Length: 529
Image (tube, rainbow, N blue to C red; front, side):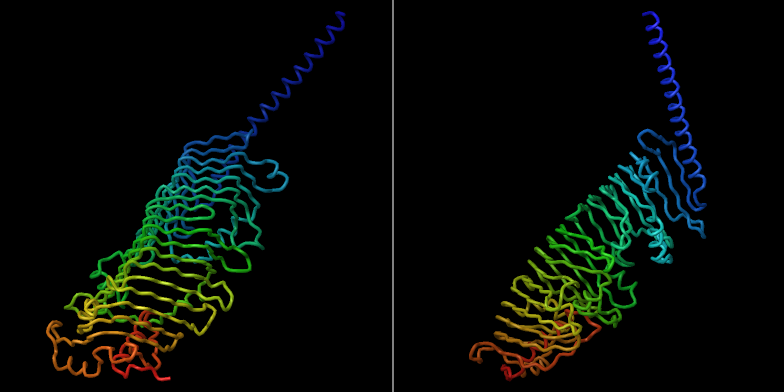
């Protein structure tokens, strides 16, 4: 019995000793592995390319669970040639959690459960001399190894993009938060992007973007998820006053002041198929309470660049676009045009404007049309209805533009006509209909109007006193009203209207309306068959 107990005790001691040895070796191996990781990380940092510098306060390594945490890292990237700072990223912490050793060892793949980037302050110096292809190459080079990240978080980021030439601000955003789930490398044969994302959330505040040398875009709040986006308090503004802009530009350019309470995008998707260019699609884009003020100084030299119709603009986009519906709710558009130095700018106004636009797209098949339906009050209280359509696939840019205009007192137009054209109108247009059918080069207009006691008053050079002789001469040719017509409408009989391709789409519409109105009032009031 004693012999049995002795053997049992001896066996237990051997097992205990083996356990202690194994545990000791495991512990030693653990600390050795931790030391190796620390050493390799330090070596990695020391051997970064000369133009990349990484500094940090401290690091925490958890070998057992595959975690790495870097405290207060500062990454500085310099130009390879100039040695000037291209980008600087300062973080509170950078964490990688749960690296899969199995995937790394067996499949040479990176598999990480989560990456958390906390409070980054990012400053990037943009150099427009660097070709876009250089940036594309960076993406391609960084996506050679297969990878997966279960969850990627960027918390409370502040971003600034500066122009390397003059240190001016191109882009900035505050309190940027991004959450991406299931981030993985993509198959080059299937996607134009180096990675794909299953779901994402993004929100940010106080975004500023320099759209051009003259305009800035501001967005107070951005909220984006996988399916929908909302942009609150959006504004697009010219950086200079109207007077300053006129002194800076060599040819005429609109002065903008656009504000939108919110822009909502629903059922959105990014198109990344390899066989087609990167594109964007959505079921609805909604502009809520849009106010747009446009001012043009016609004293500046005309811009004689070719202006395309909207159908051609859509057709020639370098990306695919497919918006099923675009809505404008409760819009206000004011257009001012200054023609004479001594006069105030003439003004046209469209208020209570609601619009629905279908098929804003360059992806649909031949026969489907882009349609635009607009209702508004013109010059405060004149009802206006517009029906407009065109086919993006039609290389001739054929379109139909129909408008119904309600009762318009002529003197409401005088705030535009008088300062710009030295003309004052009297009387009223009771009802006016016109249809413009055209293409990129020419158009014809059918117009009929019911009006009463209509006079054109030609003013003297001072813009105030009536030029009686010229006014009387002009009104000899204008029928004073339409009552002598059996149905109280006078109709136009207009020849072809030539488009001035250096002018906007709306200038083309205006030329047609003017030609139709003149024909109806000066002609016999009947349309020839």
